[in-house]
Image (tube, rainbow, N blue to C red):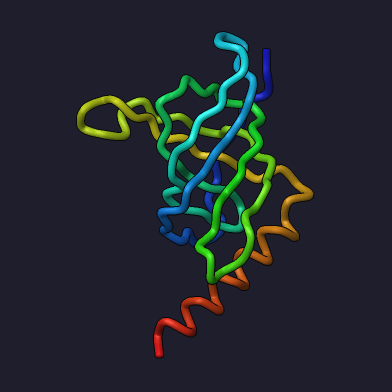
Amino acid sequence: MPAQIQEQRFFPRTRVNWPLEYTGVSKARGLIHEGTKLADYSQGGACFLTMCDLEVGMKISMHITLPVRMARSLQLQAIVVRVDESADVGGLFKSAAVRWIPGARRTLSTMNSVQRKESMTTSH
């Protein structure tokens, strides 16, 4: 029996609408590759909408395209910790939450510092 993965939110989330591509391997469906939008992120993980059948515990590779003025795109590894089957009214999309796999933190701290810089320049 696989170890239960518990979702825990320790960090504040930042709402975004950035292009996201992810790839993973599902036990039921094999290779999954989808393009979607990142809904929010934090230092601990992220949330996005998906049409694919993701499984809790599944490892995925994420490619996040940041706005041009912020920085270059990010390549991150994550593990799926939650899949909500009823994320939208029509039932077409699911909401997936992921936790960053350790080792990606340096890239995330760069993303957080760039986000702070952008919020400072747009607030003036």
